Length: 522
Image 1 (cartoon, rainbow, N blue to C red):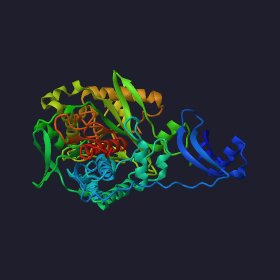
Image 2: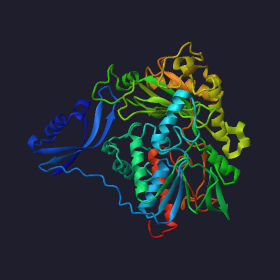
Image 3: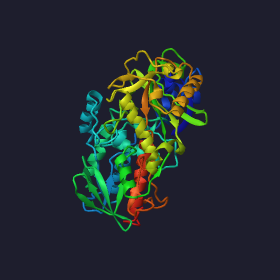
Image 4: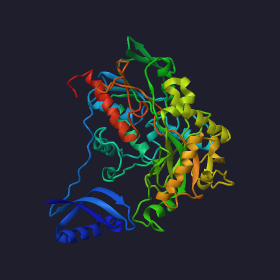
């Protein structure tokens, strides 16, 4: 016999299955010796009150044995001789589009400008240690895209995008822990993601798909408003009338190419700001309202949103127990982002703190048309590089000093490996962004007492929150509104915001594309 219960217990009970068993037996008047297994279905932490609780959804097996269900991957057929679909970009959108193509009987040809996950590590080391930026292989470009060497967050606020649980199950099938099916805010961790990405690659190749690394697309062949092929950096052309464009939010050369070829794109608002690092212990004290977190609670995250002078200011991609990384994609720019390992066991916590931008903010760059937001973004990144000393050293300031408008006399060592340069942030940002950040941090401190401290260090800029353009597509066919056979996809096209939503959009685009090849398949 099985029974499901939703309960709220202390962290100590939630962490100990024997104590949880005793609690459930007593609360529900079930003889202890009749409970053979407790399966935790969902778990979340409620830290709103001083007494912290853990919300659990559990299934109790009473005088019935528990048989663990194994996540089984779909039956992927051999597609070696199947109709071909070219996918540009091997991030989450591109990889999951490729898997869906195989599942539905088509052969994906995956073109990735960067290197495989293992080879990318050398280029990440070069940017961290030697300040050398490889334009095709970095934290944003390469197998797995920007998600591979990120925190690996697997939650999305939008439940209307598609089947979130299906994507989570696929990730488990490729090697992720099954705890991502349980946690309210699941993540995989930077140390675990590369192995999962490599397993996806092997499955694609095993079933007849093709993947080409170090293969940058430089042109699109178009005839009579229909895609006819893609041209590569080496001059080769791949003939095709089906292209899923999943190049990510930092593929500025692709945005430039579309604009030059008069393929319709649109400027899109995004958010931009800084990345702030605190001691993790301080964030724990604020969030858990205790001096020491203890062994039963994970490093605390935080999420905060404020309206400042009519603009939104909010935390973005918060990384408990994580580090800040250099994420430039071209020489002559500085960009920050954050990530955490699976255990989130680093001594610092960091988060992007970003300001909502509007279309009118891009007016000084209006000559670039739909690329105005991209050039606004680029101008700040280039200014940060110049101010930081024309290296990957990041412009930085202690948090209280920034709010007070005072350049920091000294800076502590932070998790950002290339190093810091003490600056006044007014030299990095336009006045309206700097003023919003100053006022917003004061408002943050009212919600999180102790947040505004000089123990915290501001790193600038956090600028790649989402794509600065949208590539318009037909809402029904998902094809570009102007070019038949071209399927804008994922974060870079403006239709996703993270690993899960990008993967879902990749699957949707693959299905829409295949529906034109095999009408009765979907």
